[in-house]
Image (cartoon, rainbow, N blue to C red; front, side, top):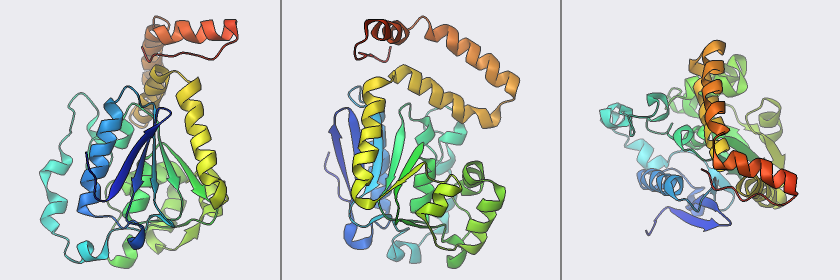
Length: 270
């Protein structure tokens, strides 16, 4: 389909969703919201896609909400029940609200943070599974300086990633911070010089696409996003059930075979 505010590309079993309003630092719009959701859904069900990369065009990832749309924000839109109703009743509702659907996608979603990442842009980055950033990227929660609060589950998600004290600091002050600090607090997994960021991110994505079982990745991702709601015993019991299914899978047989035969794997995801 044709997109207005994003680009959607597939190469080497990697889908790239690119926020594409560089003249506005990829400021978030209602159109972009719809298109990112549609592109994520398309990548999720495409058997030719094993990894998803979300990034921005130009010098920013996403500098926050488009100020023109923010100025006319309708409170009824925020409260609309449609945003709190699960899209798929077979999945945990926690991962099916307005922006929290990324963890429900059974494929790794990597955020390639090529520049400014603020407000709603930071929300989307945090819902991705892994975050690589340019070493000159700047971050901010922004909300408190606009008279807003920690929106879209950020009050839950941010402390789980950076810890309670760091989350309070970033949310209350809404201060700007940069990639080295984001790396130290665990908000991003890796930082790279801007000219090397794409190469490093795509190399990591290709390793996942080429060398790792899609079935194993889907189960592991589901396990980790269930853990905040489980006891240790529940996580262990669930893992035992998953392990029993894994040893019966085609990917397990291929995982053993390619190791013994010293060749590249040919996983099917089954």
